[in-house]
Image (cartoon, rainbow, N blue to C red; front, side, top):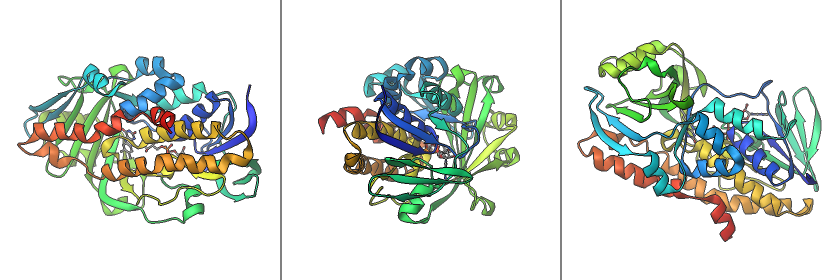
Length: 389
Ligand code: FAD
């Protein structure tokens, strides 16, 4: 039975908004998820789910789906950019799960998106709703949409991504911090890479650019991400089509495996890599933020979506304790107090791209150091933390 006393409106059906909606509905809390796109969907790219994210998604009922379509990489192989030989092989798979208490998966973003949508009560996601603003009253929030009637909710959650309208209304537009780099990414059929393992993460790291490959779709496809210098035309764009010729040019003098891979690419996307300074406060009154809207971060720790899932689980836990609509503001401040210090630490840590660790003769120590650096993130269990508080 749905407890209708507290009704939550989430803006944005990305991985963060969907995970939050699922966590709320599993606690019998009423939730509506408004998405600007006419059809909710995700781009064709890969996503790394660390142990911290996968343990929560499994508890949210996605264990079987993840086992079916995601991949548990058996190892991380760091390869030499010029001759392709393996320089370091860090075991993952069962070793990772034993260390951090849940699997490390690589998954197609669209597959994860679909799994989450399929588990929501029908009618939860409302596509074609672009939030243009909101007004807060003492006992409700009024939401304004482009070309749609206004609606009311007890709680408003901005899960509307890096260009969040909810964050802009609360804190102003702010300034993105550009890194001068771009991620070019997309998917390839696994048989486009003969001779390369399709059950491991592969990294080739050169002096100025880097390439990472991860198997998805039960190993039938490979998701690649190349980090390359930005050009003047990237400045305005966060997500745009890229030109495969640029990818080939960036790796023209690399080892044959990498050249073969870039030659197989037919379509690619460019993401300008940017984050923002951590916010000192997330929300106000009945309004809060979640995921990239609250803490956009660089992808070097593969944590943006994982942190958004943690946010969603924590939000549901805190709102479930608000037994009437008069208590939601204090529940939201409790959620923010729990999440902000943790996500700030991850956000700042993700600024270290780790290139230096892959490049020099101290490779092996460097890669082990990288694993140690993220081990506190991987081990973290937000639900255990919530039980302690
Ligand atoms: P989003 O996914 O951006 O979703 C926001 C949603 O809100 C969208 O659907 C949008 O249409 C909607 N929206 C926006 N404005 C409005 C509005 N006004 N009204 C209604 N709807 C609106 N993270 C990981 O955990 N692991 C990885 O391996 C990883 N790799 C990455 C690689 C790259 C190259 C990049 C750039 C990022 C990577 N990330 C990774 C980060 C991750 O993609 C993001 O952190 C995550 O997707 C954020 O999810 P979100 O739900 O907060 O926002």
